[in-house]
Length: 459
Image 1 (tube, one colour):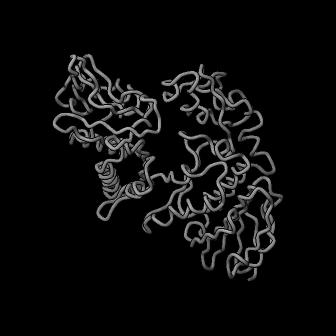
Image 2 (cartoon, rainbow, N blue to C red):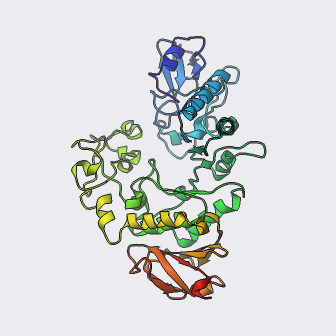
Image 3 (cartoon, one colour):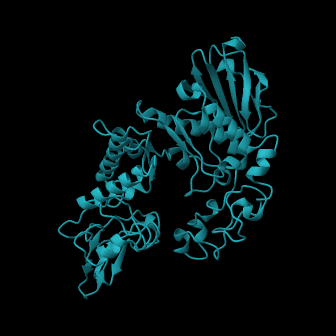
C-alpha cells in the first residue's frame, strides 16, 4: 500500500500508461436497477468496504486498510520491479534492514470472467462493517505472497554479495497461522524473511495462562521451526495491549526473562522493559483509524492508542519525550514515578532486570548453547541452556500463585552444586551476584530467576 497523495497514485488515477496498473482498479458491478456497487463484498481492516470510488478514473480502487492507503498491485510485473528498485535505493543509502508490514495482504484473488469473488461470512459477528464478518480466503495469505517475500530476499542477498556488505535483515510482520509463518522463512529452493515474527506466543498467552500452556506454546514453535532457521519470540507490539496490561505487572519480569533465555531473537516493544501499562485515551483524543472508524461507545474495542503513548524517559515535561506540553497522544499520568530515569537510579527495577538479560545474551552460552525445557507440575517451567566448558544457565518460571521451592537436581542431571544469581523478578529477595544452592531456590508467586553456574562450582 502507499498514500493516495503519492505521485504514483495520482498518475494511476489519471490512467498514465506507466502507472495505470500500479494499483488494483475495477469498474464495479451494475445492479439491475442501474446502481453501481463495489466489485466484491471485501471489508477493510479498518471497517467498511475495501473498495473506494474514484470520480476522476470512474473506477473503484482496493484499499485493505485506510481509504488513503490504496493497495499496490503486485500482480503487475512493472510494479514488482519498481518495489525492488525501492529496496535497492535504500540499501545503497546504507540501510541494513527492512520490516515488511502486513505481509498477508500483499495479494488478493484475481477476478474470474472479470468479476472478483465474494468472501463467505464467518458467522462470528452480525456487524457487516467489521472485518471479522468475513472469512478472508481471497484477500489474505495467498500463495504468491510467499514468493514475493522470496524475491525480496533475493534482492537483499544479491546486494550483500555484490557490495560485500554487513548482514542485511528482512523482517516480516504477519498475523497468520503457524504454518504460514514457517513458510515465510523460505522453502527448499528459496530463502525468505530472516525474521518472520513469531506471533504464536503473543496470540496464545493470557493473564491466566498456566505454566503448562506457556510451555506448550513454546514447544509448538520449537517442534516445527526448521533447524537452519533462527527462532524469535514476541510478546508485545504496537498492535496489542502492553504486556503489563494484558498479562499483569506481576508477570512482566517473568515473561521478559523467558523470552531472553530462549534460543534466538527476543523482541521487546518499547516501554515493556519498564513495565509501562496502557494509557486511557478519551474519544476526543483518539487518533487510531481503527477506533475513529467506529463510535464513541465501542471505540475502545478497536483502539491501539493506549499502547502507543510516549515513552516515559523521566519526570520532566511530557515524560522527557518532548519539550511540548502537547504530544501526539497524551502521556501516562504516572510518568513522574514510572520512567526510565527513576528505574535506572533504583537499586532494583524492571529496566535493570532487562539490562542484565541483554548483557547475558552476549555470552556464548545463550548464543551457542543447547536448550532443554522441563515442566514441573502445571505451573513451573525450567529452561536449561548449556555450552560445554563454558557454563550452564538455568531460568525458572513460577506460574503458581504461591511461593515454591525448586530442587534443580530433580529436574536435570549433572548440574553445578552452586549457581550465581544473574537476575530475578522484582518480587524476589535475591541480589544479583549472590550464590544459591541448586536445591534451595525459592520463588514467590509469578516470579522468575536466571542462574548461571559452571563446573568450578562443583557437581
